[in-house]
Amino acid sequence: MEFIFSGFLKGLSLLFSGDAEVYSIVKLSLAVSVFATAVSVVIGVPLGGLIAIKKFPLKKIVISLVNTGMGLPPVVVGLLAMLFLSRNGPLGFLGWLYTPAGMVLAQVIIATPVITGLSLSAMQSLDRKFYLQMLTLGAGQWQALWVCLREVKLSILAAVIAGFGSVISEVGAVMIVGGNIRHQTRVLTTATVMETHMGNFDSAIALGLILLGLTFLINVALTFIQQQKARAE
Amino acid sequence: MIKLRNLDFRLHSGFALNIDSLDVGEGEVFAVIGPNGAGKTTLLNILALLQEAKPGALEIAGRNALAPSDRTELRRAMSYLFSRPYLVNDTVYNNVALPLKFRGERDAGRTAEMLEIFKIAHLRDRNANQLSQGERHRVSLARAFVTRPRLVLLDEPFSSLDARVKETIIRDLGGITRAAKTTVVLVTQDQEEALALADVIAVLKEGRLLQRGGPQEIFSRPASKEVADFVGVETILSGEVTAKSDNLCSVLAGGGTLEVVSACDIGDKVLVCVRPEAVAVSRAPEANSVRNHFRGRIISAEPWRLEYRLAIDCGFNLIAAVTKQSLDNMGLKPGDEVYASFKATAAHLIRR
Image 1 (cartoon, each protein chain N blue to C red):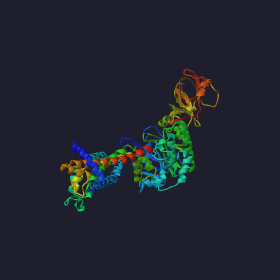
Image 2: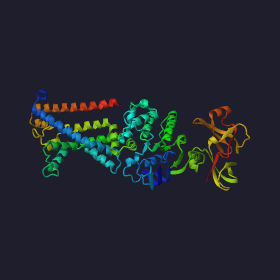
Image 3: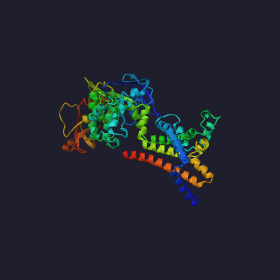
Image 4: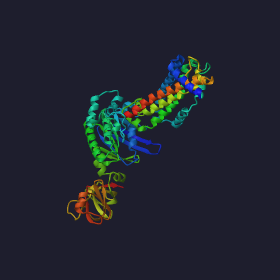
């Protein structure tokens, strides 16, 4: 029990000691996950909206694929991303393997279906006639889609929270694609795994605590925005 | 304003909408009436370019709507009100201004004018979700007219409103469409709504346009039994024209002879249509110019909207509409013997 307690103490001291390495890991974790979430939002929210409001052949199959994507195993995503980004892979020319850019790509693949699926579900809760009504008022397709998305913004925000949650806590894909290289691609999750494997439980607990704290703070902020909007309505 | 030709449209459900020809003139208020499932909303959706259909021709506001390079542009010449007002979660002002925003216009004066006309200026800063049903309809109407559309499509816009609110909204709507000379296509099951607003009425049933004409023509001179049934002709008798003098036809129907002004000829098999409002009821026989008098017995007296419907056995069933006051003053009740009459001009013959 003592090592758990000392781990907590070390974690707190690391948090407040201004350790440069810890801060660089935190910074990279946040940068990669926030950027990946942002890219996924840009792709997933309109895509989910379009799938929900448009009528097209094989729509049910497409929705099933999106739902399947929501449960993509991160290690499989990491493996595929690594194969694609490896020197001989189709995206090898990008030179993204073992770089933060590659990690962002892997996380985008994980978060996009989550955000698409939840946005789709949010939009399906809106009567399709609402969208048609906007068209009849003279809205172009994108204008109508935008107004519809605004109507379900609370659910969209929930989709963003879920998308961010899926990548900030993800370890398999970033480990494979990033390689956990010190000062380059080491993030909180991969560092925690590494310290655990090395038997440095106090450091692992410390990093885990930081990860938990960060996730909590970001979710508190997003939930606060969401609830403020809910109250305003 | 609208020219539709050779529409043969089928939904996945198997429902088919077949209209050979439909014309709506500029500035006309055109009502399409018909029972549920007649295809009224489908027709509006086709006119609003929301439903993929391939009619022989569709012209809206002088433009070919079948090959629009930009459907949005064509839709911007019109407004379409669904039966349920779909308002955005925003203030009343922003809801009314929304169509202008879609067009990249900012005309605060016009928005304020619409708020005034539709009597919602006092609600301008209130969220649309906090409005009553009647207020939501008013916001929806103001939003539909803010862009000065040339064509407005209304899909049972007052169906969920109580009678008092409906009456005031219809009055205001009639005022603005007449003043702006807006072309309106109104779809409704409510014949009173159609009568209050329409210049021309079309009857649609099971995807077919049964009759088109002025309100008087549709309600007094239905072209078929189906139309007669729908527009409230409650006495319909099969008969045959046995004599004719000038335009006055003698028709053997219901075990008696009825006299009806009609262009039918001797020997024509006909349906005699008599609206309940055309039938007068008295306690004693009356000497007057009315051609059709019958002695009968009241079978039933049922309340119907603000009136009563009397079913009178005159050898055939004749339905008469009387006010509650008349019913009370005359003390009419089932079993009573009465005299019923209607003018030869008040009945209508349909060739079978």
